[in-house]
Structure formats: C-alpha cells, structure tokens
Length: 307
Ligand code: PSU
Ligand code: MN
Image (cartoon, rainbow, N blue to C red; front, side, top):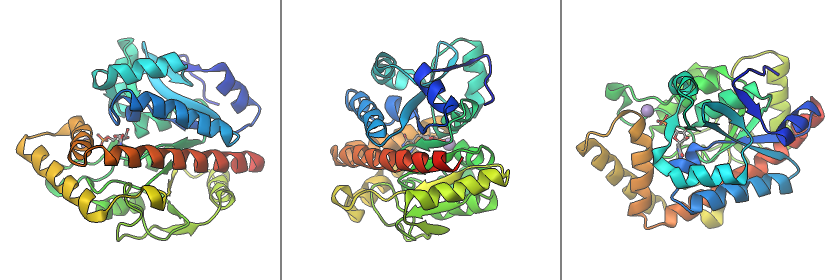
C-alpha cells in the first residue's frame, strides 16, 4: 500500500485491505454531477448496501477539505449529494490544487482510480466512463478516464459508455493504450442505457472468477494499467434504442449550439438526456449501477481468494 499523508482511509476499509478482504471503490461525481438530489444520495447508499450484501466493503471516494477520502460516512455522502454541481468535478489535473486549497472535490473515474490505488483497493464500480467524444477529431475532447485506465492498475466495472461518446474511437484509444475491454456475458460493448452498441469488446467472460483471474495475472505480470469490465444493463431496465439515441442527438446539438466545452460537456449532456427522456433514463441509470456494484463485489471476493 502506497499510503500518503493526504489520504484518509476509513477504518473499516483499512482493516479490510490489510486483511486481504474484498473492497469495492465507488466514485462521487456520479453523486454530485450524475444524478439529481435526493435520488443521488439514495442510490449511493443503496449501492454501498449491495456491495455489503455481496460480501465486500464499500469505499466511496471523494476529496473533502483537501483530504483524499477512501470510505465516506452517510453524512458525507448526503453532503456531496446536496451540494451537487457546486462541488468541483475533480479530474487528475484538479487533484493537487484542491488538496493545496483544502477544498472539496467529487472524484471522477480518473481520480477515484488514483485514490483507490493509493488506498490499496483494486476494484471500482460505477455507471459509465468518460471516453472520446463525438467530434473529437476537431475538439480533441478525450476524457482523462482513458489515460488513467492506461496507467493505473484498478479494474473498473461499468455498463459500457453512453453514445454521447464516439464508442468506436473510445475502443480504438483503449486498444492503443493497452487496456483490455471485457464484456460480461457478451461479446458486444454495451452502451449504458442499452445492451447493444454495434461494437465488439475484446473478450467475453462469463463469471466473476474468470474476470478476477485475468486481472490477477495482469498484476502478477506487473503490467501497468487497469481493465475495463463492461456489464450490460439488465434487459428489464434497458431503454428503447431510438428513444435514447434521439435524446442523445438532441443533447449534443444543444451543447454545440451553446458552445459547451471542457469539463462541463459530460455533465451538460447527462442532464439534458435526463430532461429529454422525462426521468426514464434516471431509473435505468440507477439500476445499472446496482447491477455493476453486485458484479464488482463478487469479482473482488474471487480476486481476494487469488491474492
Ligand atoms: N458518464 C456517465 N456518468 C457519469 C460520468 C460519465 O455516464 O457520471 C462522469 C464520471 O465521473 C466520469 C466523468 O469519470 O463523468 C467523465 O467526465 P469527462 O468526460 O469530463 O472526463
Ligand atoms: Mn472532456
């Protein structure tokens, strides 16, 4: 464990890591920027419970008062949920400044991976990752999440990526940077709200054990970088392709018309899609996070048995 003086690991999390017991990290941008209050807080607390029910200890990650936190209290989760978009969305470039200023930050996939790794946590569950945006050939808008997957050895369990992104270019980028993309029970990359995207993942795996074994070997080999596990949304919660794609196209058109750019792009698109689909997308979003938490906890348990 690479503990540093800016990191606070919750006692329960530290004890589990030290004992080689399963721990699953969770991000906080999904709480502050990904969902509205109070569903964000309800979801974050339920996700922690699902991880416990599946035999692992949850560690929600954030930056509070300049401290890097691995494991939050229910009150801290409530605080982030209520603050919402007032909290700084913290990616890699924000980390040092927020710590120096003793400020708060909601961690994205990038910073959650970084802090999880510092705390000795190997697996992280979320909804969707950032990626190569549509039009990136002119905007160069590529999420720092992809660079982090390339360099930090944490497994990220997600439901694929939303087609607010260019999914084909996102896969190309991950391939270039040596990040394996696994489909859980499928050879097709899931597209967050839908089970299908028209793009193939690198490998299909059918059990938590198989996923854990591949990650275990990656660590034993000393490879840098993580692994991306894409877990399709359960059929009963999946959205209609045409409905969701129409909303996404409209959201992107509005973002372009309003000149939205930089770190505001993803939160803007997420909020617009939610508005345009009248809340149906929020229900799907919540359910797929639950589904990912369960798979991550089960995989963490298998991984611990191998370590
Ligand atoms: N995609 C989602 N939901 C999210 C995010 C992305 O479907 O909540 C959040 C995650 O925290 C992710 C971040 O790491 O947005 C990516 O932001 P950007 O595209 O600015 O890198
Ligand atoms: Mn971006």
